[in-house]
Length: 127
Image: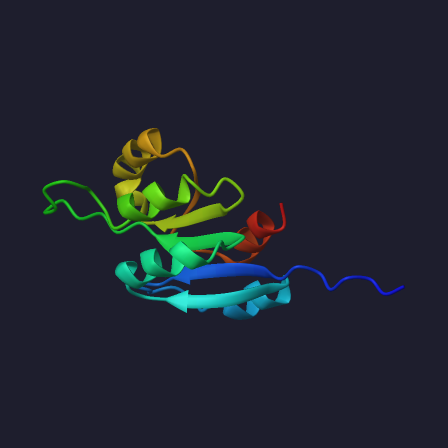
């Protein structure tokens, strides 16, 4: 009798602005199949057919938007229908207040402030 192959863990990394280290080697070391995307519209289409184990995204506060405050509202509206998917958001500390407002509407994610330290992220990923 053979053991079934383990179900792959998929990590969706959404890198719109970047400015932090490439964490793909860390994700892979922890057993994730990594998908990297940079356009939120493509991400939303991708999520119609895929259910990642984990999503890593950036909080990009955009006060000039009329109906939303960041790049994440549309994503979080989809993720709230995916209870098995965990999510972590990277953010600038100066936008913590805006991030917390978003979290009151969508309490679905954890957050790490910049600069992101590899050991910090690894500890979070291993929980």
